[in-house]
Image 1 (spheres, rainbow, N blue to C red):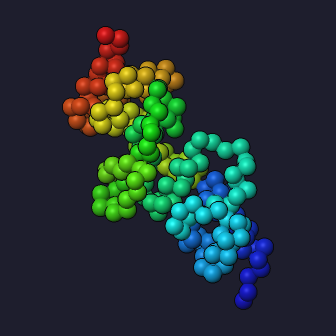
Image 2 (image 1 turned 90 degrees about the horizontal axis):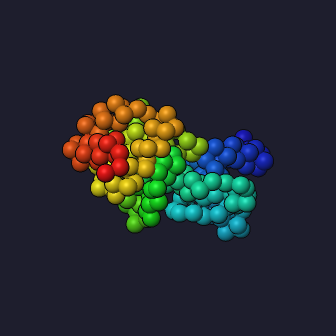
Image 3 (image 1 turned 120 degrees about the vertical axis):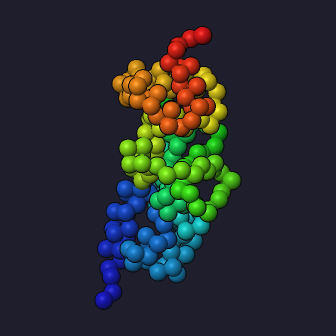
Length: 199
């Protein structure tokens, strides 16, 4: 049975609207677009080609969006395996002075894709270390602070992130110290320094 074009577009639009306008070739295929139809829509400008097998409805380019829209693209690129992490996660949570020049993603061990635009970290994350956002996942404030501390970011970045997290009631000193201890001596030392206050 042939599918109505309007129904096909509506099905894809529903998927894309939960992903800030982004969608994959596989999602388009599941909605009813053949690969030939996908090429047609990309060539005509009905869809904006973002990366291999990743598109976006151009209507979303003009909507009031956030600085986080591009993070959805990386979630799709990783087939849902990547979690925004480290100083990029601090920026998402608006914690401290972190202003990363590159995007940090944590992926499961064995993840094989690579792209020069992202820095990949491998780890198995637990459910309580991850938060779901619209179209992507991000490490929790505590995890973001501790993993940044373990990755040798400037102490000022750790200090400011911890001060804001505590000030906003996002965590406690005890939870931060426990998480830092699990992450190793580098993270533990940086967190302890931050909690001691100005030196």
